[in-house]
Image 1 (tube, rainbow, N blue to C red):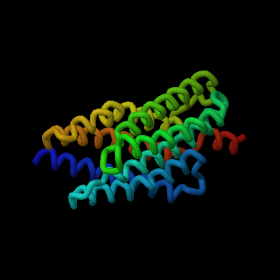
Image 2 (tube, helix red, strand yellow):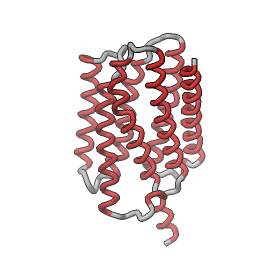
Image 3 (cartoon, rainbow, N blue to C red):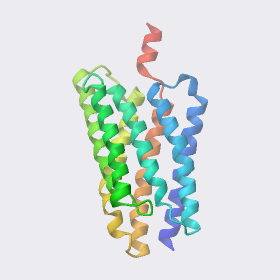
Image 4 (spheres, one colour):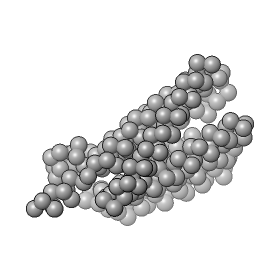
Length: 223
């Protein structure tokens, strides 16, 4: 009972945070930078996915198929952001090749290994690894180039912090999800409760990223 209440509370917090992020983005859309708009598009997909998956779960319908499609969409949108911001470190064509390879891997995994009725932990595991690598590369590029002395004022810094925090925390969680799916409700509650906490941090950092006005653009206007 306690686990159920905790899950319900954290789930509502996550949904409200996503909605808040979307509203912030809508109100500031004209001034949003490229990466902020991509995050807005991602969140606009995420909210209905979250709501539909919860509804299906409550009516005892398998909702795993949703995540087979959502995982691909999430990775591609985030990879588009990194493709732009890592173009001085990695050739855009290489990031594009990774994006295509990931889609192919996701399709192969769904067709041959984890069907639409199963949780796509293999695909999410690979997604986590790839995004963690891209996030580390972004931090490396910023430290190498030192273009932004106040990274906390740069939206991409907070987007990257959100990515590396959430996907690092979720890496092991998603990988073991299938092995623990037959465990007790208490164990499942701990797993998804932990995931909900990662989600809260994830969307709080996204909210900060959407609230920040781009430092470079502001500096250019002043000059």
